[in-house]
Image (cartoon, rainbow, N blue to C red):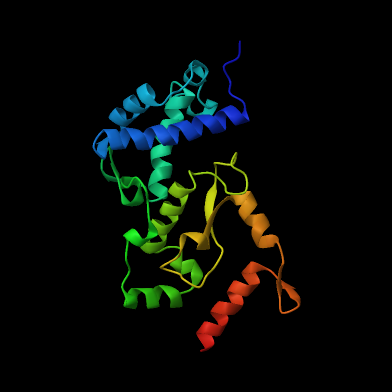
Length: 215
């Protein structure tokens, strides 16, 4: 009998791996080695026998004995990219930012007025590289349960979409929506009615920044 997982089973395994990894770090005091995190996640993650017996990807077979080991390892890397964990020392992982809080809040990280002015005046692409946005993005992902708001079955390639650009640096929760990449692209491709005409969201954003630079 084949132990290969189908697409929906793989998606569910990644979801469990993420939840189990975060819970393992919390249970281990917020900091632990990769091995300790993996062992705790495997014992308490609620993985089924089928999930535990699934083989790893062929390209990773020499490094990981099972698919679950592969996914748990990559979960730490992905959480680091999202600003939820840090890797301060070799093989040591630490919870950070909103991942340390049971109920993340954007208001938990106040920003002074001078910094807010700088954030609101910089180009949008540069704002997306700031630590303030990384914290805000991570909080939105946690609130959304790391699922696309338009299709809850989508848990991969998640992005945080701005519904409003008026409060960069101090966004309200209602200003943001978590979307998978494909849904995000569809949202930006949808024309918006403005002054009787039809304009894309990217067009409006570019025009807004152009006006700010000329002011």
